[in-house]
Length: 453
Image 1 (cartoon, rainbow, N blue to C red):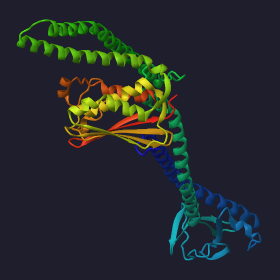
Image 2: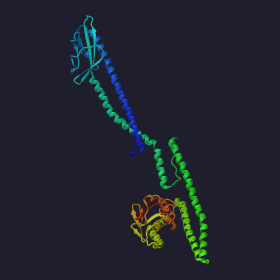
Image 3: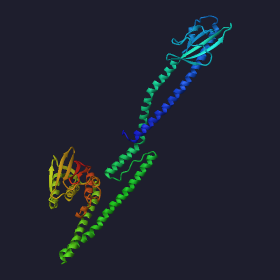
């Protein structure tokens, strides 16, 4: 359980409120019990005094009474005194002060040396005209002992109530908030896989979570439709642009090769040709992305030798690297260089990351491709000493059309290379990440399982 989770907070509030409520009820009950106990003791003293008088009249004038049990009942001790306060018969507590004066009236409390007693005195006249006093005594310490016992009992019960309430409350919250966990997990899976066709399971109960799940699903459906329209638009636009771009390039080539043009006009046509070539490259990339997205659910698996692939890509881009005097090195530490993957996609992955290192590399720099072994996986590192990427831009470089350095658009970079890399890696159940420091270079890391299917 997380310390700051909603379940933890609500459980604490719920447990605290229930425990506080029990505490208030207990204190009220204890107060009422104290009041009730004193009233009950008052009635008990009167009843026991009346019972003793009845027995006293029956046995009169025989003293002392033989039945000693008459002087003690239900914790009440009784004694008989003459009219001159002379003790005649009965029992009383050992520490009770015998010099306590007799006093007719309601129950009173006597304290002496840290001990207390409830005392009730009653005066009555006998048939021969003599007067006698009946004194009934109840130990206040017995009442205190009972209350202390109640307090000790509650001291044990309270923690048990708190623990039980917390456990039951947490269990109920886990069950009640389970739809939130399902929504969170599903949303994270959709985010990581970019599979907008997935939907959040809708609970059976038509409650707030039912409406929340339906709202999320409607949102996902809308996003999926918009995404599909955008992807279709990119694909259609690329197809439509391919023909006019080809016409522009063919006419530029014809003008430069067949016509006798002034030098100034020739220079202008070369500028048009250069930009048309860049546009043609962008159209090719868009079409390639479109084809890859259609192909992602039916990848053509085959054995791919990563070392041979890295060497062939390095050879293919060697001329471009030499223009900036960048050296390409391959560090092979694989015991087995073969993985199961889509060959065309793996080729595009290596080309894009190698080309990216060249485009953003320093003059007379380097690119080192490390092929490392992991348990059941392969780790591929593309390490360069180029211009690097600022920390605030590193999470965006995988986005479509995003460029950390927009100035490189002039060199034919359109922000599609790394987007394709991330897509290809995810389609092969792998991960792609980057570590970079501005001015020091970058390390792009790709981790691929050996069997992706």
